[in-house]
Image (cartoon, rainbow, N blue to C red; front, side):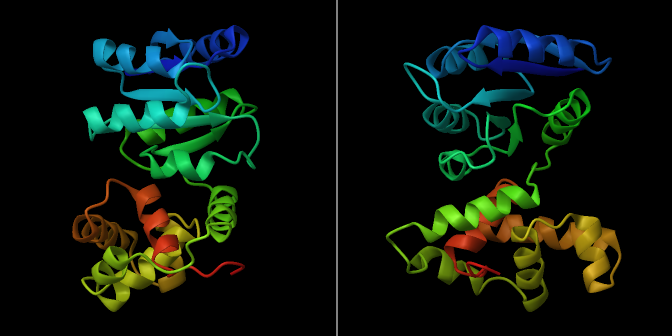
Length: 220
């Protein structure tokens, strides 16, 4: 069973998600939290496999809560919830350590699948999210690549760099394999090596790294 903690300040949202996920045979809702501060405490007490985290909440917002949760447990998996795919805080939440992003109007199937994907250690990073990441990064006043990022790029092979760019563009392993005309297992190996070399947790962090290192150009 995948244990899930639902964090949202709106009771109707929490109850709705609880009902939808509770109907799944492989998912169990182990708790709910009404704000980020309560979420941090609940995660420590309940040890859920996945945290569904709203962004805009009182006392402690979802971004800061995610940052605290990940800092306490590097293996924690947070799936960010928001009303719009243009939420101005999505980029910050992913940088804080969230493993993915999901709209609140997602269907029951999409919600359950999102939980399963994140629980399995993958990152839920849809093309619409990558576009938003690029937009947010373009607004940053600091337009120069970060020095550590530039230095780390040199540790990657040419093919690994190519795979990293495709990850940042929102492609799945299967899609990358098709694009490069290689086996999907080969791409999985490349992704694993990229994460190890760059010291990253998952594909989401890899995508953010690619934007910050200017491997992905705005508008492309």
